[in-house]
Amino acid sequence: MATSTALPVTLIDFVAQKKQNDVELKWSTASEINSDYFTIERSTDGENYVHVANVEGNGNSNQITEYAYLDKSAPQGTVFYKLKQTDYDGTTVSFDVQTVHMEEQMASRSVFPNPCADCNYVDITGDPKSVREVSITDNLGNAVVNEVYVTYAPGSAMRINFTKALSAGMYTIRVNTNEEWASNKFIVK
Image 1 (cartoon, rainbow, N blue to C red):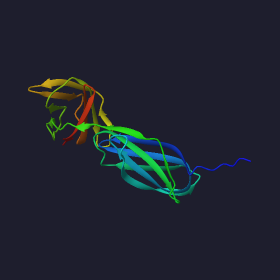
Image 2 (image 1 turned 135 degrees about the horizontal axis):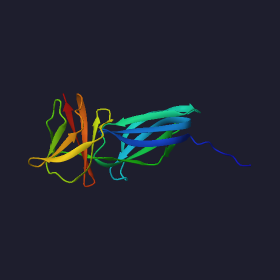
Image 3 (image 1 turned 30 degrees about the vertical axis):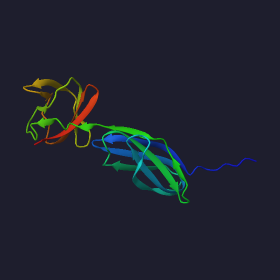
């Protein structure tokens, strides 16, 4: 006669995604048996992990449970995230690793004018390279400008022209130059 042992947690999904300068980790379970807590670990090389946080489990449940954690100290570059679940008896199960790429800030570049009022362009100073893609998002990460035009201003600046003036708020401009993403923030008054 065969016997079966129920798994302590039935994981539906585990997702790590960049949200502005942070990483949002979300996971959901279909059921949990004796689930004490979840552990989130982070690595920059995929081998050596450090503890980020513990999130309380749901104990015993046969309903879908959704979890979320926002990592506000994610390093630059490729970041690996590991999710572990620990039972009340100390038994631990690991789930698949998720990766996120955090781009570097444009440290050697600056956005001008910043802040600006009623502006329909910004200049990015520094070493202009061939621009493949530009995106501008608001403080919630929503795309606010669908069309931009890149020209070169006097000196060594890229001019990012918007098709319409932006309303007041904080924005993030991301520029892809030769397959490298960089970002910086600017304010419209």
